[in-house]
Image (cartoon, rainbow, N blue to C red; front, side, top):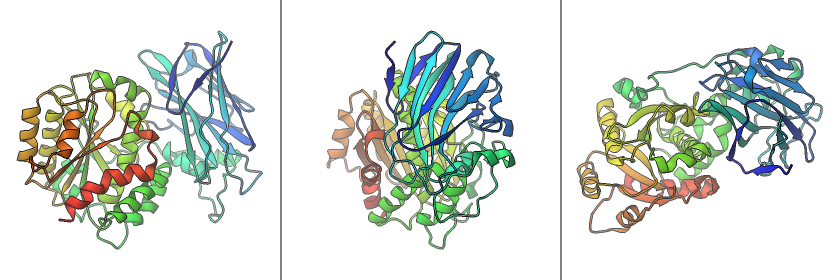
Length: 444
């Protein structure tokens, strides 16, 4: 039977049976491992790392380069199974260039294959795929996320504490056979509740310059934040650097702003949520926010009807966060105006002294355009900058015309069309387009 090929971010439904996931290298010898994650995106304990010395756990088993996931045996408190390939630790200094290829075969003979794009940043570990629960069944998502920080960096993202490696000069993958020293740290939650907003709303101090400083001597966060990102979310290091460089080119590397993210939850966006495109977009926004916002937390507001849903995304919970949250939100008609009002109320109630940079992802034109224009006019003097980022399959003519209009006098408004798949836009261009107008506005 011919195999179905998946592209990065693509997904496919699985039969509720055992599925064998085989990893084949194209040039670099690899070790294969798997992690069992709870709904919070973290391991439940150190036993949830399946590797050479611990080859079976709760329905997941490892034999050589093949991970077998017996889906009916996966415990109810496991939401995701992650398949990982790492450079063979017997080859120090080796990094991935051509990524491994994953083939998933089910009991009925159906096969799925995924060949991630080649790597060029010294990656020593790659998350190949995630098996995750959806609507009572299971699906497989092609991920292809590389880590230049080795298994220790990956373990940090998934809630495992690993003893630090003494060498740092040459990118090396720590020996997974030594991972018996790993212990689960759990999923620590800082501030807020699943529907309670970020620390900006938890107390007025949350958004003040004297809050949880990200380190560094300059007033703004800038590249001095990189050690914090490396500790809490090492996979975001490359994008954080790109955002920092874009802000520096725009002349605002030393400025602070409270970053908000509004996401369209219209039913027409369902495919983009499912394909990981919205999650990837939110991760890019978080990486930029780390450079601007002192608490490294981004309030996320889902635009769905008259009752927008607010939560948050942070360095310690970002992985899979959008997928976890959006399933709690009903599909609506994308009332972006209601979500924008929620963002303004949250910003004003926080007592923040820095301006607000509100990034609004839109998939279609607003349904009440006159009300929308009035909202923009009423917020012009509140220190709020609106950046509308268009991607999806809807019409965006209103936003394009709004951006091009000089008569409206919306100096605090800009529009950026990211195309149907913003993940396909190179990081350097993405951030340059994202911060250009904001840099001009905040420097006035």
